[in-house]
Amino acid sequence: MKSETRTFEPEAMLVGGEWISRDEQALDAINPADGSPSGRVSTADAAHVDAAVTAARAAASARSWRDMLPHVRAQILGRIADGIRAQSETLAHLQMLENGKVLNECRAQVVGAAATYRYYAAVCETLGAEITPSRGNYLSMTAYEPYGVVAAITPWNSPLTMEAQKIAPALAAGNAVVLKPSEITPRVGLAVARIAMEAGLPPGILSVLPGTGAITGDALVNHPGVRMVSFTGGTATGRRIAEAAARRLIPVALELGGKSPHVIFDDARLDAAVDGVVDGIFEGSGQSCVAGSRLFVQRKVLEPVVRALVDRADRLRVDLPDAPDAQMGPVAGFRHRQRIESLVQSARDEGGEILAGGARPQEGRLAAGAFYRPTVIAGLDNRATAVREEIFGPVLCVLPFDDEDDLIAQANDTAYGLASGIWTANYQRAWRVARALEAGLVWINTYKQLSIATPFGGFKDSGIGREKGVTGVRLYQQSKGIYWSMDPANVRG
Ligand code: NDP
Image 1 (cartoon, rainbow, N blue to C red):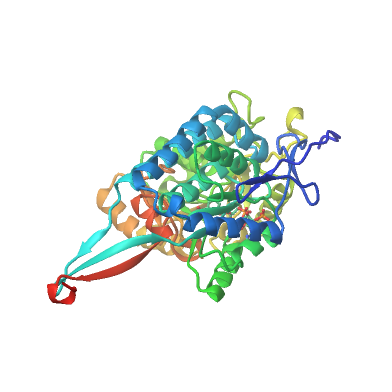
Image 2 (cartoon, rainbow, N blue to C red):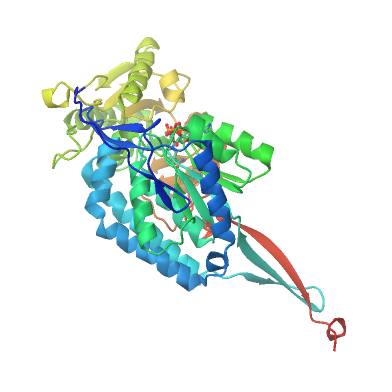
């Protein structure tokens, strides 16, 4: 790591419409590509959380927001989208500095974040309520109303994407949002909040409170003014948040971890399948909740698939994230790399064979960063630690299977159920397997194809609730049944 001594003023956080700096307990941002400090950010304690939630409650119930016509709210969301596009390069570089993601991936995520605001602007302007069938002389309706204050808690792997996916629909639904970004990536949320304020979002409607989960996150989830929690992160944290929410009887949406099965049948187009597998696990250095980290290959094609994969993994260009032809950057931090290394060691200890990677890269210019080579492991069974635990790094475990029944039994033998992928030329089989896999998402002859228009979320320990899509707005609303008598005798005069 570089021993640079450059000092930074702590960047301000947004608390109820006020930008507040404080040096005490400020977070140091470390660039994982070379270990150098890249900034310092103020953090929120329980008093800041209280101030943000109190302001959010007041702003959410003020007529200026509560009664804002949907097409006017949509205009604000549209201006946020414009602002994000106008600051594309700044935002992409900021995320790259914080989590080491390859610059071109960050650029694509900026485009996606702007598109998310634009999509929810359209939903906000067009989504109606319902008149339900009446069983008498009355009108019955379902109206949808915001919860009031939504707490959004996000991880470090893709703040551009994750934060847009929570904030845009929650605002479209009429809420105020208090965001607690990951302590590793707090600055993307702050930069987007500046854009949102400039776009005309009323003060207090969005607060961004950097800080640790233990202090800031815990105070937020347990604040009596928070009426809904939307969380993306690890399953253990999600469970803790769900317990706190259960005590308070408030709803939660949880997007959690995964150990997604990626399946190649012997009739698949192998070159396309191998491309899909390589992107599915190594993009973002494997730090993706939907990473296809367990590869099941039908025994007849195991040998050529493994050979091609090892060749591809060995040739992937691991480099500084802003190198023009980098295909994989560092992982997001040095502690995180240690965890990846210990899980790869567990694979060795349990009889696994490291066919590619399994080490830090040798190139001198990468020595100061948190880099790890794309890794392919064979020879483990479905019970091994590296196959069961989410590694959240560039590590692929390859397992053989004999037939469809064997595949489904192995693929579903996991606590998780987020994503899955199937490569086959047999359409009936694709359909059968897609329906049998216990996962919230199935890709057939493709992988990691994602659209803001399609609901997203997990089965089993991978989560509760579905983000994205038109119904993503309903996640942040509660329905209200209204009965209105049409009997004139019930009305005076
Ligand atoms: P964590 O669960 O450790 O943290 C996620 C967020 O929760 C962070 O902001 C963290 O704060 C905060 N947090 C931690 N403890 C608490 C608490 N007690 N109360 C409130 N908030 C708390 O996950 P990571 O940040 O390490 O992210 C990686 C995980 O996220 C992976 O397991 C991955 O699968 C999952 N993920 C899931 C996705 C999905 O869509 N299903 C997408 C992306 C990631 P801090 O860390 O700052 O202390």
